[in-house]
Image (cartoon, rainbow, N blue to C red; front, top):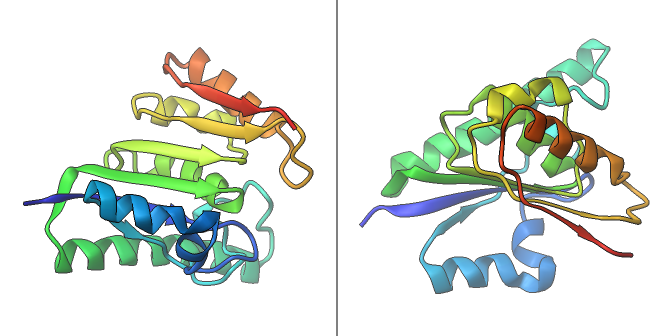
Amino acid sequence: TAAPLVIALHGLGGNEDSMFDQYSKLPPQLAEKHGFLLAAPNGFRVDGFYGSTIMGAGDAASRRRVEYSEKDVLEVLRRIKANYKVDESRIYLLGHSMGAIGTWALGAKYPDTWAALVPFSGVGATALAERMKGIPQFVVHGDNDATVNVSGSRSMVAALKQAGANVPYLEIPG
């Protein structure tokens, strides 16, 4: 039977193991319990931003890092699909912090790939909202996030809603 696939993007400074070893080790437990595949690309480097230039990528090295990070995610997706029976209609993308930034960037660039997006504690380019308004999304952010200001998610959710998307948004106090 074809299985759903979740691609999980780590935050800045994390690595491909973060989604397995952090968060009380809950992601792999949920995958096992609910029968979905879970893949967590490194993103070429721990600071690759998964194709997003929103945090700046002015010089050649930064542009290359961002480009290779995006390619790494797409290569992991390709390899998982080549080696496992993946339900093409249920490929989900989620990310935390830098991974959330990448989730919105890759969601906008490849909207036909993703069944849903789950960015938590991120920021997105509001100009891209129109491209991904048809993708179901669930957005989470803490209102006192000292690393990625909550205004990033608030602005992106507002832009998505203005584009006609129905986006549940959970803002966690504290």
